[in-house]
Amino acid sequence: MTELSFDERYEQIDLPFYREQLAPVLPRQVLDFHAHTWKSDHWKTVPWQTDAAGGKYMVTPQEYGVERLLADGKMLFPDRPFHAVCFGQPTPAVDIEKTNAYSAEAARHAGLFPLLITGRGTLAPDELRVAIREQGFFGYKVFLNWFGNDYGQVTVEEMIGPEEMALADELRLIVLLHVPRAGRLADPEVQCGVRKYATEYPGANIVLAHCGRCYLPDEMKSAIGAVADLQNVFLDTSMVMDPLVLQMVFRYIDSSRVLFATDLPVAAMRGRRVYVMDHWVDVVLEGYRESEYRVASNKIHATFMAWEIALAVLRAGEMAGLSQDRVKAVFCENGMALLRRVMNGRQLEVAMARWERQPSRKRDQV
Ligand SMILES: [Zn+2]
Image 1 (spheres, protein in one colour):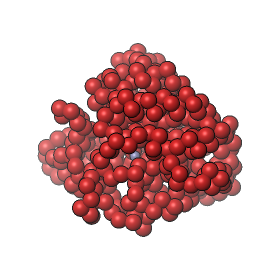
Image 2 (cartoon, protein in one colour):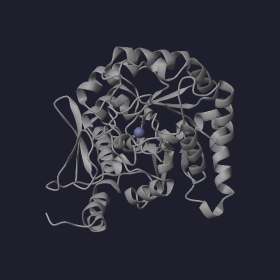
Image 3 (cartoon, helix red, strand yellow):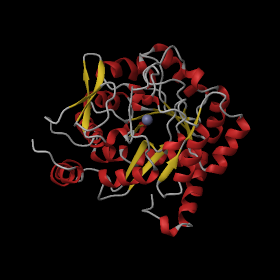
Image 4 (cartoon, protein in one colour):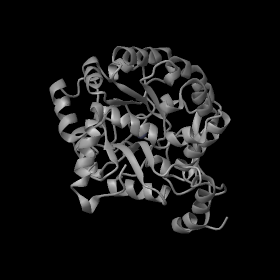
């Protein structure tokens, strides 16, 4: 294969693929329910520049500012507005205060909805309430108190506590949770924690990142039954590219509980997450930084992972017999309905009023 520049590849390979496969079936606007944004000075230490265990689990750009997030949104969905639920890097390597302040500031851009990175006892309940109200957060991205793949024996209840959940229940906040442990959502201990919080705090909107980290069909098979009846538990599709996984999701739960998501900047890579034996592997084009479970080759055809996620949703929807409208809703409307629940719509109204006051920054209305 001849070597093309990034832009040549975009024009010659990516865009024709997008126009043929995705543009005709996506809704008028797209909402990505899981995207990151951060500046390089938020790092206390850059994990992959250390010898920390798990430090090279997911190597990303050192900086992914809001302008780049918006530019990637434009690159991925060039013919329609792109909106995103966004937050910083939820790891101990980052200055959480700085990264949270940055996400709140980033959400001055119309169509960006920030989440506050927080965990059990990170902030006193009053401080948490003030942060949510005054800085316009739509809920929490639960802090991950570990590096990389080292999930240990952490439980859901250790990650986020009753005080944070009580506030989420009261204000109907989003609680975006990356579940712990090697067994992922298939782990009975994790299932127990999710079930406990979903039933004890019915007003909280619990979103399980990466479909509960079930990238493999076998993982989802053992997981989905545990959350099927929990109407306030939702799944985001970030980095889930296996149609069979999503087909199972659509079979067990109403599609309105499934939210399109990417995990930008990771899903801006050209490649696809596949599985080999019992673990996911990111197969990508050459030129990205080395990372665990990342295999690079220029001998393959590849386009953006975000589009592979979208394709998996479309294929799964078709196999599960969903109507076109229901599939379209996964890409925007389901997530917007969830954002509208927060503080009974008040947080969205406040955000929209703020965007209205900034005509220069105004983008397409949601
Ligand atoms: Zn993420």
